[in-house]
Amino acid sequence: MTKEFENLHPEQSTISKLYQSLKVEEPSAKMDENILTKAKFQLESQVHKSSKITPINTRRSWRKWQWPVSVAASALFVSLIFVGQYEFFTNNYAVYPDAEQVGIEAFEMTKPAPSVHDKPSALSLDAEHEDVKVQAIAMAQRLAKEQTQTGQDAASSRLQQREQEQGQQFAIEQHDAQRTRMKMTSALKDQNYIVSAKIAQLQHELNTKSELLASVNKQQVKLFTDTLAELTEVKTSLAKVEKHELEEQITLLQIELLEQMHKKLKIQQDWQASKVLLDLLSPAQQAQWPSQNKQEHKE
Amino acid sequence: MQATKIQRDHSLQSDEALMQQYAQGDFAAFEQLYQRHKGGLYRYFLRQLADKTLAEDLFQEIWSKVISHATQYQTTAKFSTWLYTLARHKLVDHVRHLKVVAKVIEETEQDNEHHTMSADTGQHNTPENLWEGSKAAEALKGCIEYLPRVQRECFLLKEEAGLSLDVIAQIVDANYEACKSRLRKAYESLRQCISRKIGGKLND
Image: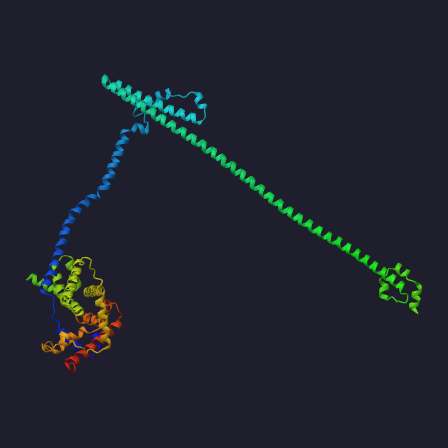
C-alpha cells in the first residue's frame, strides 16, 4: 500500500485487509487456456507473416536496381541510334565521303532560279521546300547508285528501285503536307493582320469620338455660363426700368394730388394750407399760390 | 534449470518489459504478464457488473485487445495504467450501450447516496452466507455492490490493481482531489455498511 492512501480514512487498512481476504474469484481455467492459446496463435501468425515477408523483401531489393538499369539501357539505346545515324546528325562528309558527293549533286540540282528569290517570303519558303524535295530525291538516287555499284543482282536492284520510288513518294507527300501547312499558316497570318488593323482602326475611332465628346461637354459648360450671365444682366436692367417707371408714376400721382388740392384750396379761400403741404409743391406751383391768401395767412 | 532461470527472470521483470518481450515473440513473457493481472482485472469487471458471464466476456475482450495490440504497444505509460484504461473504456461503452441498465444504475447510485446502507443485501446477506467464513468479509462483499459507481470504480482500482491516486485519477478521467474524496467516501460508506451488517464495531 502506498503512503498516500494511509491518511484517507482511519479504517482504511482494516477494510483493505478484509477486501484482500475476498480475493478468491479468478477467471476459469478454460478462459485462461483460451486467452493463452490466442496469444500463442497470434505469435505464430506473426512469425508466419514475417516469413512471408522475406520474398517480398527480396523482390524489393531487386526493384532497387530497376531504375538504374532502365536508365542505363535507355542511354545505351540512344547512343546506338546516334552512332547508327551519325551522318544524319552531323553531316560529317569526312567520315562519309559518298554523302558529301551526293550533297553537292543535290545542291547543284536544286539551285534556285533568280526569279524565285525575288518573290515574297511565302514563295521563298516554297522554294526551300522544293529544295528539300529535290534533296530527298537525290538521296534516294544516291542510295540506288550505291546499291548498283555494289553489283547486286537484278532482283534486289528492282526491289531497291521500288523502295526508292516509295521513298520519293514519301518525300513528295511530306513536301505537300508541309506546303499545305505553310499556306494555312500564311492565311492565318493574313487574317491576324486584318483583325489587328481593324482593331487599330476601331481604337482610333474610339479615341476621336471620346475627344469630340470632351470638347462638346466643354462648349456646353461655356454656353451655360454665358447664358446665366446674360440672364442676370437682363434681370438687373429690367429691375432698373421698372423702378424708373414706378418713380414716374409716383411723380405723376403726386402732381395730380397737388392739383386737386390746389383746386380745393381755391374753392375754400379761408382754408389755410399747412406748411408741410406747401413744401410738397414745386416753386412754380408755389408761385401760383395767391398772394392774398398768403397775406391773410400771415395776418 | 535454464527454463527455471528464464521463469525467474520473467518474474523479476516489469510489466512493460514483459509486454515488449511478448511483442518480440516470447510467449512465456505473456504468460507471466497474464498471471500477474488476470485476477485483478477479472474481479474489477465482476465487482462492477455483478454478472459473472458478462464480466468474463469483457475480460476476454480486453485480453484479446492486449494480444492484438502488443506489437503497437509503447512504453509511454505503465502497462497496468493502459490495461485498466482499456478496461474502463470497455465498461463505459458497455454501460452506454445498455442505456436502460445505465439508468437503473444511476438511480441506484442516487438512492445509495441519500440513504444509508442498511438495505437488505439479498442473496449476499443471507444468514447462511454471513455465517460462512468471515462475517465481515461477506458483509464487505455485499456493501461494495451498493457503493456509487464512481466510488466503487476508484475503490476497485486501488484495491485490485494497487494503483496510486494520480494514476487512478488519470484512468477515471477526474482530478486528483475528486478521486481522493471519492475514495474517502467509499471507505466511510463501507465502514458504516459493515458495522450495520455485523451489528457492531469494525475490528481488524
